[in-house]
Length: 67
Image (cartoon, rainbow, N blue to C red; front, side, top):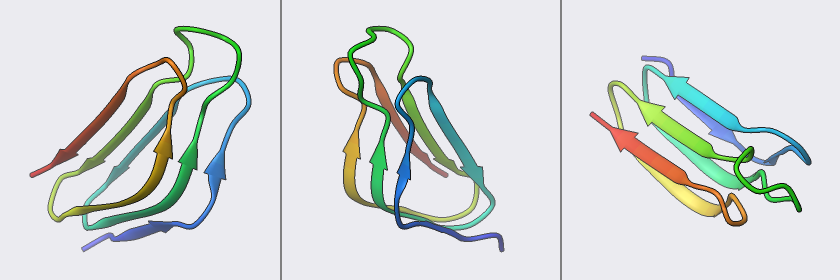
């Protein structure tokens, strides 16, 4: 099982795409900026949960998948 904890993951320009084989614990994930269309957030766990705190993509999309 490959769990991951994202305590503070930020970018000022660009998308965030995280895939894990276990539970993702996302305390703070932020890709918001003034650019529109380039700052999507994708969190995907292939074998576990996705526990969310603060996730911000500004005006762009957030995708959460747990299987």
